[in-house]
Length: 321
Image (cartoon, rainbow, N blue to C red; front, side):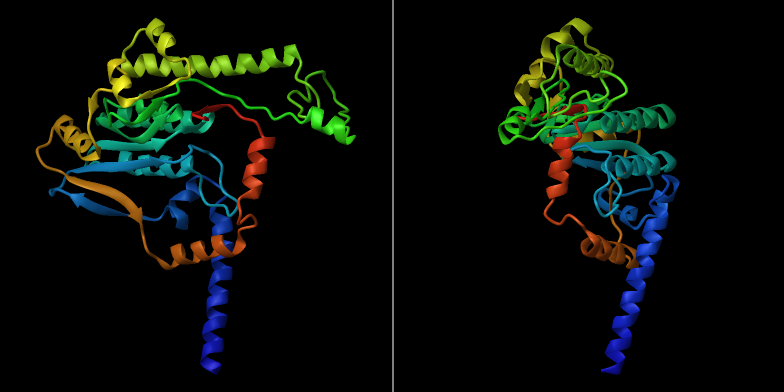
């Protein structure tokens, strides 16, 4: 019994020290290289030899926001993976598997810029493989590819920007709830949910949306070699199937992840290569970090994330039915 108490005490101490370590490394981007949540090892999927083709995965909503437990955001994780690809001279091509409805404008653009940097620095081909959904910001990332593969039933398109504002003015008035804003300028409380949106405020938001939309159009024009007029015709926010996208020249070929990988090998200039993925590395620090995430999560039901999404409007390249 005495031995069990000592073991329990050691475990508690290790978790405590891991918590301190995690807090310390989460402060700067440079420290992400040693973050327990970004601890990977290379898993060989197929092939052999000294050359590599790396498969990376963008899954879910694209976000630059860390979760409540301080785990790195998607932007940080993907950027770190792309840094490793960039610094590995044995990597001859990249296959990016996208299964995402898109997400935040800034986070999407940051990952896209990192992909373009990889092409400029390493001059390696990037081949895109679309999953069930690669819409809006997901397609934004796809434009970085030298070739885009999709399934005929892939949901893509939704080319555009959305900016949602929640308004509870009428409900608040019925309940006798009033909010008074003491402000330094007429637009300081722009978008307030407690009063109607004015026409000048709507125009301000529309200008922001238009700027992000024009950036999206530019990305498609440059990435897909289409005329701006043609892109404006098809980028009206609607979603397309893979079949429709191919007819519109938004994708190149039908095929799955394996087909995209074979094509990447053909573009790489090498005859043989290992196909590798970055998988979570099992380690004590990884285990302790996961335990810390589980025990210290102040929002296990995700309620705060829902409330934050409603109260913190942001520009989105996201398919939102």
